[in-house]
Length: 422
Image 1 (cartoon, one colour):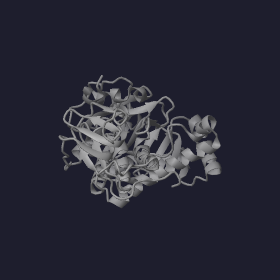
Image 2 (tube, rainbow, N blue to C red):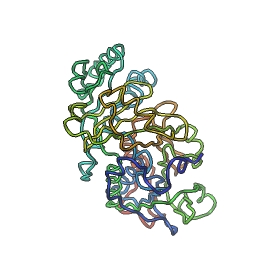
Image 3 (cartoon, rainbow, N blue to C red):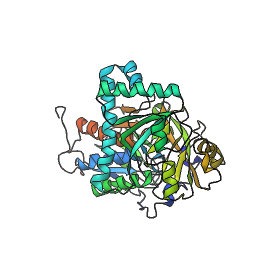
Image 4 (spheres, rainbow, N blue to C red):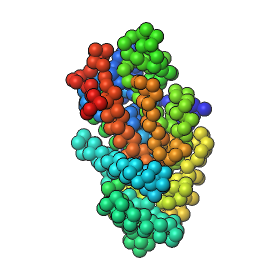
């Protein structure tokens, strides 16, 4: 099944509250003529846009190809939570990889949330960012485990941003009978995901990135140089034109499909669903969540929710493994919302939408280098806002260390070649 067309209209953002609250969405041209660049990126979501921005600011010439619209996929329709950590907790990472590697992964996750905040501040991205995310416990047993976990983070990782909330402390902030307490991460936050994606795109363009929309890649060939072709080792093909490049980045996440079957077999698409209530008014909204934090609970199929800037409740839940969205998304999500906030019975749901994200078997991001010139990052398993942004910085560093042959490219700006000693 082709997920780029299975549930959505090509070339149009999903009919979400995010789209409705973003009145001015820039248009970008379709690629119609062959071109060349240092790095071609497929996908204008967080991974692709962050990679493009970091590479362009390092002096490289970058082209981004998007099959639909900027921020069209999960990046423009997700829950908006900029969460810390990974899908696996630190105990699980320590058991799997050892203490040293687990500590490095923790630091990467901390850097990821800092990077999001830094990019918003440095580029003046107006995306309604607000700090604070709670992981809420659904049982007393889970609450006791959370207490031990916070102590572990403090003793082993010198963590100071995570605050344990008992049942009363959480009840003072969250008007719901569903939870026994939780962990409030003050370094995490939440934002308007589509505005954030568009802000990254504008920053990338200002740095010199060429962005093409409605330009679907049919396939690519990374053996061009070996076949005696141009000096650019990769040819990226679209129905209208081709891009010749030195490096190719696959930033397609759950929409990778047949473009790279080996990775697609590891990075599995799943769908999630979100509703937006009618505006509740500031008083009622703050009665639900007093400090405007975002919340994700400890269920295996997680419920996650937060307030919008116009005082709606945005509530997500009911993830599914099937490729098709349900016919009635409201009926899937509303019972979950009412189990958390029964006082919202009878509240109108103005918007309901779905989106495709990706998880991996390991529940950790999948970073791959294919041959000498093709890179891929995907499978953020529920932590995509922060980790996809961070992947752009990591991919930029890796590509620059590999090096750009300035003799092969007419477009490199400045000295973009980085040696192994940098």
